[in-house]
Amino acid sequence: MPDRDLIERHARPERIALIAQSHAALTGKALVARCDGDVADALWHLPAVVLAHGIEDDPVFFYANRAALDRFALTGRALMAMPSRLSAEAPERGERDRLLARVGANGFIDDYSGVRIAATGQRFRIGRATVWNLIDAAGHRHGQAATFAEWTDL
Image (cartoon, rainbow, N blue to C red; front, top):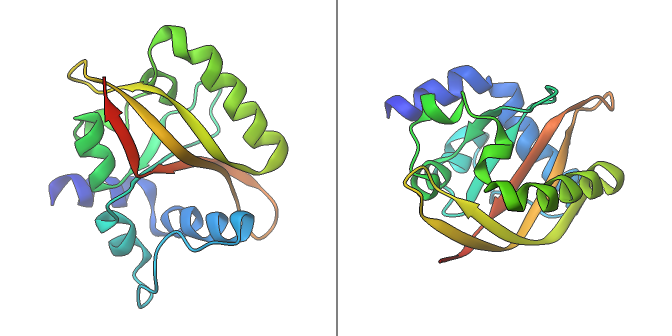
């Protein structure tokens, strides 16, 4: 549980809740089933990968659930120090930039597929990913998040 505790302290409860709230508001679909108010626990145990990054010039991940840490073969500490662009290989980064621009313009997309790379060097293709803006009740943008449950090792 050290990774979970570290990530939840770093991400803060309100930003973790914003991941689920923004997803529901923008897509009209709940990211997690009823969770008796413990969104952090529900997201952590979700079998789909969930990642979120901030709004820095070179955005850094601030959240990953257990499935994301496993898929990308990272510790919580390593993930929170990693610019999100590094989750894609250099040739895929232009495609990733276009994806993020679409999300910025539309609020979310739910049709993304692309190649990503784990810390071990394992490449994998994700499919049917949803990527959305993290927007609070006042309309301020706090970053972007992504979720996917489909991938194929390459």
